[in-house]
Length: 251
Ligand code: IPE
Ligand code: IPE
Ligand code: MG
Image 1 (cartoon, rainbow, N blue to C red):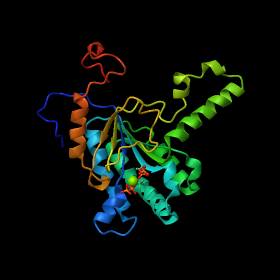
Image 2: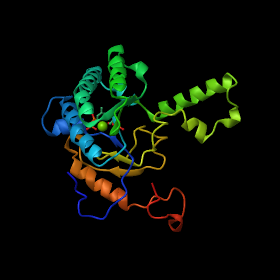
Image 3: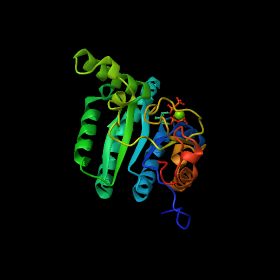
Image 4: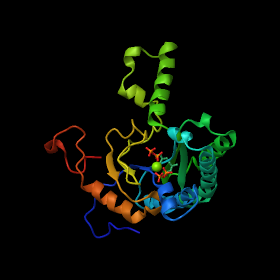
């Protein structure tokens, strides 16, 4: 489906990132038991992924579980881990069908060895698919990401492979997660909160931000299409003046 049919051609983002928030409020609003909102959230991803493939988005990164989410009640954490495993199992045939490469970012050492194996297996099996890349952020925090990159650079300095003065945006940027991918163009947060909650801090430095009150399980490709339309109308200046921006050169 395409809600943009008939309108003037617009700029398409290369990289969309989504903070999928609002599952528990959805669950409460529908009288579900605690945790069941997450089940609805799991299924909301499929049409969004399909729409992104159709729209030729190169990379879609979704926030499934944050570094801070470990602080939730153990029963909820356990359920979320189960659902993540189920998500990967369910996504595999879809990845094959659509030619989507599946990747994960986050601190894997915090995860069970079973889940780590499942993730590595999914990444290996889909490594050659190239219609789109779907990145699932699990046990991910932007501060962890930057600190981990700094640690790797520090090791290179310590071993004499790098001068301390060579540490800059470019060298650090080579070690953050998704260093090989384009920067985030559009960062969407569902669920009505106006914060980043430690998601992709480095990679979203110049992202266009979109906030919607829609709870994640209710988020549809129609709303995403509207946001992509709006994205195409925004002028991305990257610090320059309006006059310096040439139409078609703002991505
Ligand atoms: C987002 O939904 C999913 C995760 C954080 C894992 P929430 O569980 O945060 O739902 P709300 O924001 O409380 O409604
Ligand atoms: C952000 O949502 C993390 C995910 C969607 C996975 P949270 O619900 O954890 O964010 P806060 O705690 O309200 O900032
Ligand atoms: Mg939340």
